[in-house]
Amino acid sequence: MSEQQHRNKSGFETRAIHAGYEPDPATGAVIAPIYATSTYKQDGVGGLRGGYEYSRSGNPTRTALEGALAALEEGEQAFAFASGLAGEHTVVRALCRPGDHVVIPDDAYGGTHRLFDKVEQAWGLTHSTAAVSDVDAVRVAIRPGETKLVWVETPTNPLLNIGDIEALAAVAHDAGALLVVDNTFASPYLQQPLTLGADVVVHSTTKYVGGHSDVVGGAVVVRDLAVAEAVGYHQNAIGAVPGPFDAFLTHRGIKTLGVRMDRHCDNAERVVEFLAAHPAVEQVIYPGLQDHPGHAVASRQMKRYGGMVSFRVTGGEDHALAVCDRAEVFTLGESLGGVESLIEHPGRMTHASVAGTDLEVPADLIRLSVGIETADDLLADLDAALSGG
Ligand code: PLP
Image 1: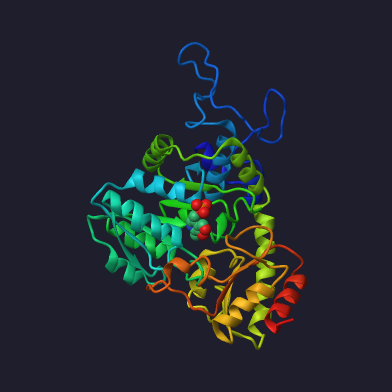
Image 2 (image 1 turned 90 degrees about the horizontal axis):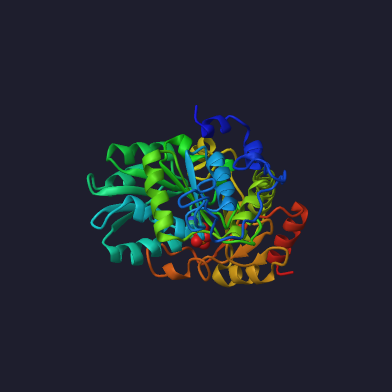
């Protein structure tokens, strides 16, 4: 049994707190220190201590974070990056070549869509889009022999569509492709794609994993050693790694991921219940609702349904914008997954770049990242914002 498999036998919260780091033998420091160093003294040429040579290639603070990430996703190895997109780009360069093809979600996070559409396409990688909730559509989009990656998000942003990870892995593998799951919205506490057949997990750790809106970061976790070798080589070759302070902040956030996620889910459930009964709300979109088309799949593959809630208001775009402006405890802002509640208007903010395309989102849609404040305060804030108070 590998060290990783052994570690994976502990409970999630135990792994979140202990995996990746043993108290420093020299000082007993319980928390991995911030190793603010770019280089390391060698004991004779090539005599590396612990394999550390130069901090782009490896840094002990980052090693601790990567150990924790691998343990949380039940992967063989994890790699930390300066941002989610840096990790995504590295995965593409590690696993694809010019002339290859990938399938991406038809409602992919805008930055992911831009990466494939503008950056990887210029390098010679083609892509097709498909709805992640429609396994047949994904199968049709795959070009056997050409498609190297099937890339999905679940839940998606902002409409919270759900992809069936097991079924999508089977479809990808049948065609000789790998399944990559962007697990940013669920976090490893709610969903572990590698245990459901995915080959690679990517995260914007900027969101729930870091959890405090104080650091931008990314992660890639893999379950196969050959894939790990390719990603590790490209992590060093491309060099988009986090500095030790960023790695420290993300690792610090991880320790409370389980308790934070449960509170995010508790509060989101209260918000959903409140919005569903509100006369100024047309529709609530949340995978935990029975009428959500992905409810059955989400119930199978997620522990709970997460902290992201989208809803449509009566009165169209003007009312949606006014609600966003009036909210006070919910801070008007982009991003998600932090302890503080955020509200945004996807049509004008996160998804403004897809206006006029197939990816355009409804103008009366509001997205909430429900934080871990006192739930009653969140409901009162939404009530006042919806009622014009
Ligand atoms: N994936 C998803 C689902 C995201 O929401 C984001 C950012 O919002 C990213 C990837 C990109 O991550 P980053 O902003 O850390 O580069």
